[in-house]
Length: 246
Image 1 (cartoon, rainbow, N blue to C red):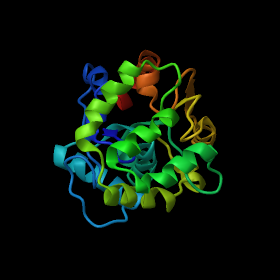
Image 2 (tube, rainbow, N blue to C red; image 1 turned 90 degrees about the vertical axis):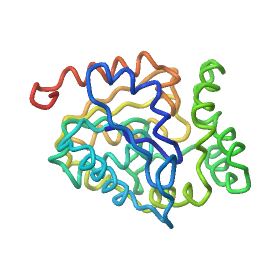
Image 3 (cartoon, helix red, strand yellow; image 1 turned 180 degrees about the vertical axis):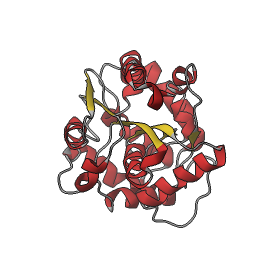
Image 4 (cartoon, rainbow, N blue to C red; image 1 turned 60 degrees about the vertical axis):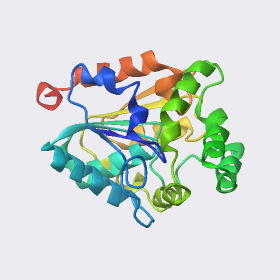
């Protein structure tokens, strides 16, 4: 099950989903408020979005799954693992944080950009974030490909705010030791939006978690370092005990 980040549609998994689909059935969905999902009044607590993910599995007739979340989706994945541990075969947490006072904050410029988004159009807001979510060496062609996928689905400001409110009100740092699923934490070393220190904190708190940091990768590590990211993810899934892998 693939859980996307703040304001992004499930179509943004377009680089990763085909790689995983070669070995697994993949389920990707739009979080509430974005893509083709309904846009009810906010805020959208992370726990509520985790229950949405459980409802998706129910609708698909799936009892348990490998759960892969990135950014806000990684927060939803953590909450899902805490609320529905029996439904998690393994956990992959990408470019995410655990919230609370221990979280490593975005750099000052990134914070200013996020604060200014309210006065921008949807496309302006998306473009303003680009220097903070892609590595400097990433070819513009790849960034343009991502933007073309996202463009029809840029989030409505109300939905973006409702998801952001959920992020700001949530923390799992104090509960991470309760996660029992085999866990991979993967993070770009150049991430300016959710600094890599957050991945290290999570990996330290979840028993037995593995940490992979990707050089030359920022927040959107599956675009910055596509092959390295996918290789690490597939190696982790292949290493799982047979019962979990199946």
